[in-house]
Image (cartoon, rainbow, N blue to C red; front, side, top):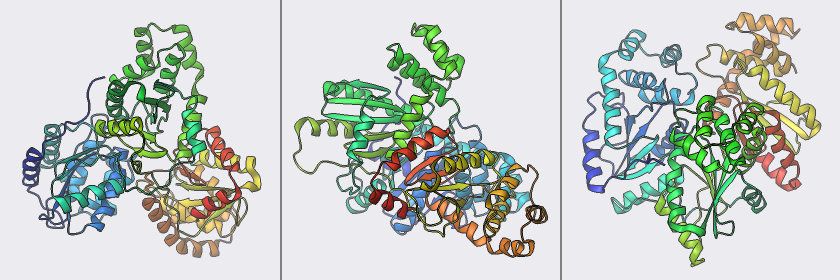
Length: 586
């Protein structure tokens, strides 16, 4: 495999480069600092963040950084650097929009909108965000297309190349490198060390002896480790590492090299288990996963795995067939497997296992019963392998697991029992989404299947780039007050024109609602919709639909059997477990 991980800078060199970075941004934002910077310039910790507005992991990190900035108001200086990746065609324009907003003192506000609406970064959406932020539209249009703003973005891109950054996000904390998504706990540890001790050796993103999260259910771990899609190493190795991967994810590609080097260095001491977890926003990933499994059927999973990751920009059906020919596969069997999607069920089962474990991005690893996200460092992996080989000599290093942040807003029950049920489905959606009708069909199908065992709670998630999404969400809550949620949802989901208040009132009249009460409820429901959207942001939700099945999060619209596999498993849990999970969602 070709190396794609950023090189690690020596501390002295990094310090010089960080100083140079801080000195190269002449334009000031609304906080008096250069655009993209927050926190005091003389803070003891400087964090340089290379980010991409179209990268979902950059979005996760951005909202984590907001928490860290509040936690360390005088100790942390953040320098945001534009690093759009070649695989994200809309990202350069989005970065120019953020800088253009920064010229009017609204860089952070624009950045938050861009990260929260990654599927909508076309030019029309950017101008909608500018209007929402009350920017001067003439100036914004000029700056968005100006050579000066383009040069500012290009300067950051050149700096990212000089640093060897080719995945996002990439961070430098006082010269220490972190590649890929990092959670709040890992970065807090790094910041605390930098404040206390000055510039220290890198903090391993996978070895966190202070973590206190409970490990995953041992039965679930056993299920995940048994009969996987593919594995390398000895089945009786003392250390098993499970990876949930996506063949179109650049971070998954970056995660391969340290794992290969770990197996090369530790031989029979490590077992590497791979399970499929194609993400819904990677359109070619599902078929690439099918191709790898089809090759595995002929004993060539790992050669196909390497070919796909090495040629990640070319994984259409014709490309996959070419790789199969290179591997001398039986093409009749390979073509049949892809044409019939014979391995789609295997992939769905892998994803269901991942969701049950809390996986919501890739790569995600399960090591020592804990969930770890992002590219892992080879030194940390070697340390874990050695600890397992030598046996426990003290408290075993544990890994930072991810929590599901509970909902806190008033409930909007739309199906099932009004009070409690063993299964709870919380549905974040935008009724104006092109997928809204299909979502409703799915949810009602699940209600029919599970009856009184399933309770459905609606959450409004209006997408900023759709002008009438807020109004549509408000109308649903107003209709819910008259027990007409579903008729209103169907009516609004089927309309393709832009809604206004008069049209919504006409829909209410056609549904024979009390229109006077409905009009009053429209105004009253505004605050509830805003509260739902704020809750979604707190939970890291960036697009719709997102569905929580008890505590299991599912992003995007999936096949029905994907949801039923999770719900069926939830029904096998003890009543006390179910009650605890359901309580966490209310």
